[in-house]
Image 1: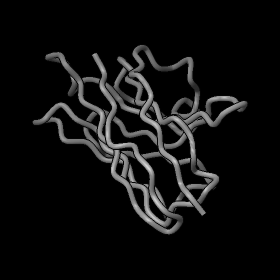
Image 2: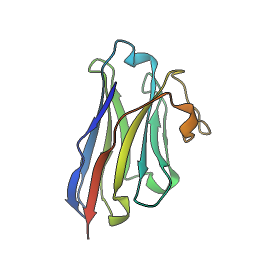
Image 3: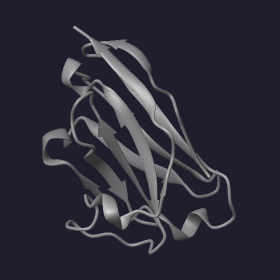
Length: 126
């Protein structure tokens, strides 16, 4: 039900915009999150947004460079990534939380999310 896209190869300092398309009729009720997983590492939280876009949450290390947003009319969520660094190289996953409302604590908890899309690979070259 979740399809992530927009990954690719980019030079350090560049930008990418990831998209997550939801194929269903209840997208507006879900909170959405982005996580990433680099080779050999645990999956880590990137950003999340509540059902109405009114609240957003970010990993501390990514604040200021990454921006999460959503368009409920299009059933899509987005992750704008700027000033990319080689350490941002990872598979990026979008996820949906059926409760719809996250807070600072729950946003980063993988177990909060009910549905996951396949990853889209982001490679940042130095």
